[in-house]
Image 1: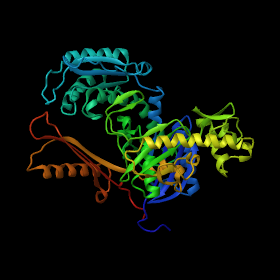
Image 2: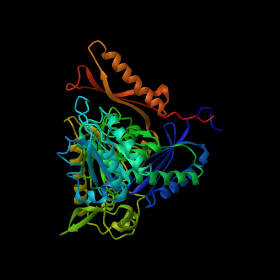
Image 3: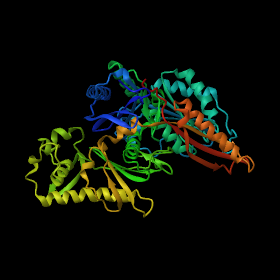
Image 4: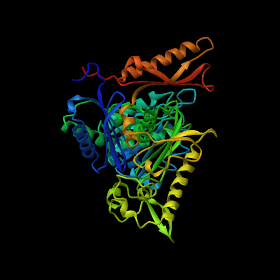
Length: 528
């Protein structure tokens, strides 16, 4: 008999390039966890993992209150230039904003993958929000006809200073919608990025190129869960470690691109109770390093590069290293050398410890540490102790150097090891105050997804004067809290975790951009 008011059951899932992790949690307790190879058909693999998870825990699908999922599938698709939509970009900036055209500086193969159609049209605002060129409806109708004839799947509308004047993009969208219909996906730059036309435009184009794929992936997942009769609401992890609805994820897939590293950071904080630390998530293909600051991922300070494209988008400040459990190790002149390739999905088929013919980092770790329960260590008996020691030194040196690059001060910080490949490293690392490898470290990403919270944001201009600053900030905080509650947060759990004031000195006196983020626990019905 379940005790009254027992916390609701929830499932956390992380779909990586090599493995899919799933956990079943009640409150802060992990009831069951598993790690399975990622399948080519993501929905089928996730459904199989969840079905096995529920059977192992002897839990009926109807007992689950919510499913939280994070994935790197969309980011991987962009990095690998596959399954991207054909995109048309209509910049509303003439006669001024044509000095640097859209897509300039993009990798050639990426421009080809999205069939980059570029149009320049009248419209735009100055830094003070004043319109310098009105929209030309007939011009937009002609552009819409050209886009329809060429067959774009997604449309991007950027304009100058769009965060100050989003109505310009909205009016143009209404005109083009009449020409193109609702089948074409639409991204307004004012919905995606901040100040800075080129980086905001780039982020909007990246988002548009992923929208059809996001729609297919999320649709496949929801259909797979329905086949399992798992009718609990599905939430998708986003870059800041909080949750969004599937409809929001399909509209803004760029918000989910860094969910994997973010979930590992949040999972590490949950498993250790440490709020300030470096987190090293070692997977099958790569290792991701990030920093925890007061329990939340440290964010990038400025524009970042995503697949060779400079974007104006806030994401966790992470560093990826091409070193994981599946990284190939070559013997050159009797000395081990770490390769740039990974066994990835083929780790359990090709690694020597599992009976394959390829020497990889997992083999080296098993041989060096005498690890049990991972394949058959006897298959590694022919490795020379000196070779194993040299390979481990190379693995450790590579990751220690990466950790050093992520430090912002000379003060030693704890290092938390998570991920299925965390066995690669010993429990002592140069420069670390201590090294922690918590229980359930191998499924930290899925735990991070399961414990994710709901957020609300405010990012707009306020008229601020010396006498009303406190009342303005109080209003902004309340708006962010209300937005979090509306998104599904438990009201009593919501608190403000970020507040920034940016005086807009180039605008009218007193104009200040205020950014507030509030987060709270997802409101779930307890079991009675």
